[in-house]
Image 1 (cartoon, rainbow, N blue to C red):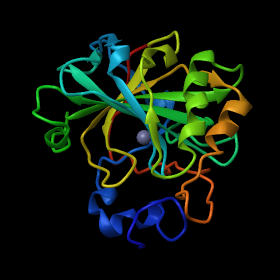
Image 2: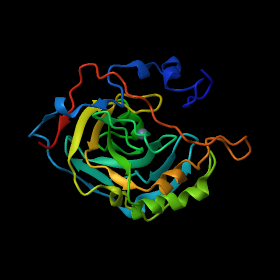
Image 3: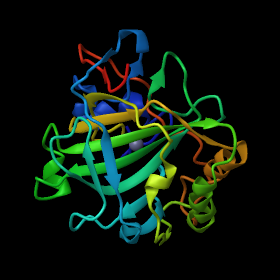
Image 4: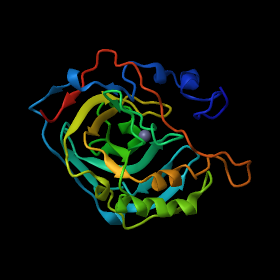
Length: 260
Ligand SMILES: [Zn+2]
């Protein structure tokens, strides 16, 4: 594999384990959800997020996704409840998408792939740092939200408008006064299971909360995501049009639903 992982033939998901052995582990994400096999767990509580818009800092293009970064130096933007035994701090959110509107999400539901998937990454504030949380099975909680094609979501446009400032790899721009809960769907029903980051090193430290209800975005908004480049300004342009990992083996794990 080339020095840096990616999504191309020579450095894509099939090669990640060569440098990152955890990528072949027993609790990898994403997975395919089959709703007929998923049981309702009445012990699963509702979850809530209280985000401080002032904790949003920057938006960046790292060549693999666009990411919005938050101040997580104290308990400022928090996720609580649901399957979580502790409060979790929001660190960043980012997206995965595909080369066309008919695929792009990482998780799938009964064979349905959505156009994109939003991941809000939080870490367990009982641990000292994000780095130490990565080594714990309950270190990180990711809220996953599916994006399907439909009516334009106005709140999502705030993000889309900022993409012009981070067209190429390595670009970063201020992105402030933003509460990402404006991107949540109306319904808080979720599926939960234990898994991993979907990017190397694929640490198996994640409690997933996958929201059942997708949000809708327009084809134009999706096209804007695909107008980013995975190449730097001074390199031959390579469009960033595919950054999803295919489904991984479930290996006996159980997915639970918060709803009937
Ligand atoms: Zn992700």
